[in-house]
Length: 180
Image (tube, rainbow, N blue to C red; front, side, top):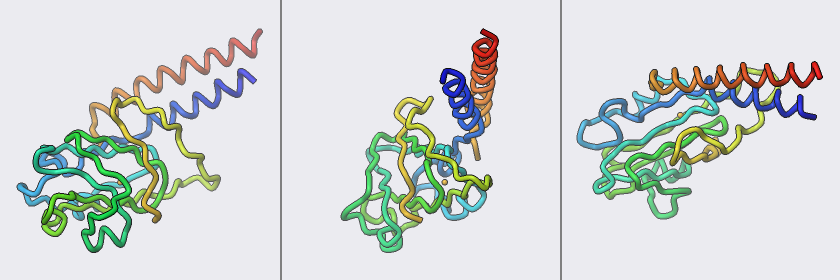
């Protein structure tokens, strides 16, 4: 039983070590001022389950709404799936398919402040279970797709190193359990 727990923890840590963090809009962030083409921005990224997208913006002038595809197409703000307003919102992508976001401030979505992230299906032939809701990032929200999201090298590297150390520790523990 203990060995199974150790192996499960090792798998979780390995998955976390492979996750990327993307700042939406790169250096411009989530805004209407810089005329960012969010469709082009998303097309240059490859999003996977477990990745995190980070929306950075001035909360006095913007927000982030997660919406359905029909709402996304029409910029309908009436009934969002969720709304984020901190100005520093991290969202972990937990399943494949499209994830739709836009700014709910009047006129911003129509001006192009909207984002359709397509998370790829895992390459493995065996479907992966949803990752745990635990996240190493404070104030990270884990949400599923809307029915159908450039990594931060420093954060990805530090996470990868920490995860590798944790996996090594867990493997050592597993061997110690089997030896006794």
